[in-house]
Length: 120
Image (cartoon, rainbow, N blue to C red; front, side):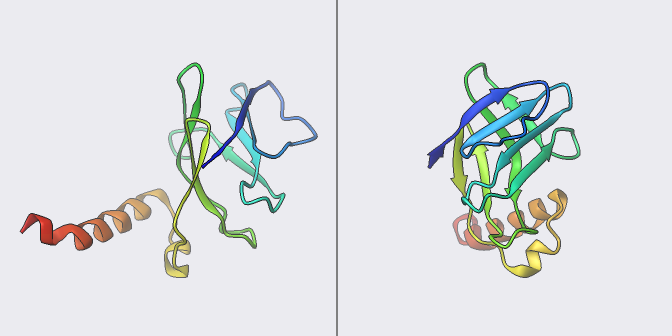
């Protein structure tokens, strides 16, 4: 897991440094360079319908996961307690339907199918 630096500010700076998450509470937005290293800027709007931010006074977490399906890298990861947690690759059919509700439904179906033998 990679660790990232956290910077709170009012406005997003012109230069975005790698491994740094910039958070503007005034604009309810976080931005960072894609964690795969491709250099694309990733913007995560903060709202109940988009990403949620958890700041414990030292570390920050964003949820849900960040899936960069529109980039060539198609990277997929979480930011949890200032660490980048890489996710497994998603099949193309799941990327096309990657809204949060469908993601949870797909996850639940995979989970129950995989572990159903433990519950029977």
